[in-house]
Image (cartoon, rainbow, N blue to C red; front, top):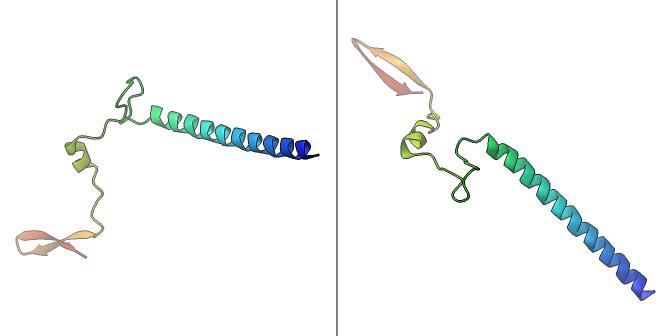
Length: 83
């Protein structure tokens, strides 16, 4: 009787382990597919596959200001003002 209960626990544990491994493999496959389309990742390299953007690229990618800006006419000069 005790062996049967132990066997059931072992079988449940093994199934849980397999489920976790399948889930991790699926996540890896999905991440790999995404990486093939990411220009910052070079999968042909064996080391340092992620190539962070240069400082220029990082500057260009900065998000726009949260403030809306509009031009305000002041005579012959125009300036930007945050609303």
